[in-house]
Length: 170
Image 1 (cartoon, rainbow, N blue to C red):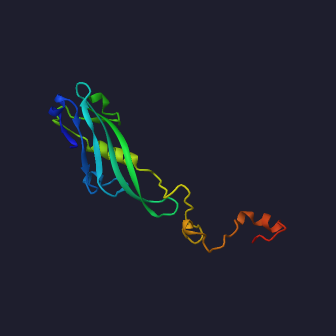
Image 2: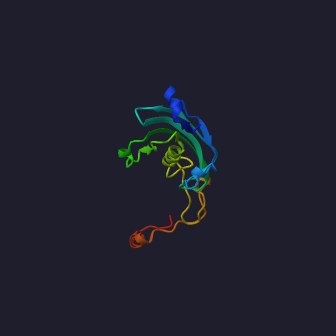
Image 3: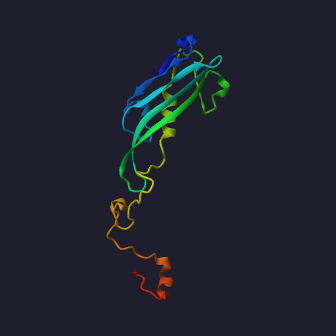
């Protein structure tokens, strides 16, 4: 239940457990590919007149690729969420507060889930910490073994290599 009736909060905190499918319109322009549902759990409680505090957690799996070798991988996400929903007009400019209309009868937690999911997605992912990446010459995945192309010496070292008394191929 990610849309909470405000009347229910008068009896105490309300559990907010639910799942959102990966193809939910809420995630339409999220810059990550979800590999399954987004699971959400938490508690929403009143924290003063017109203020409601939600503390929870979201869990999801994102399909992405390794930043170095471009192999596909799935990255599990587990993100704590804390959000304040408030009818106070003075806090509307605060990006950490979600405004609620004073005539509202319910609070929709899904915008907070969306925002926290976007923030939780790693900008760069690695298949493993020692990933060797791709050969810049032939594009072979160096994790599978060395490539067969010969590394060309950097042309900026050309003059120095010409003066060096040994064979630059060794």
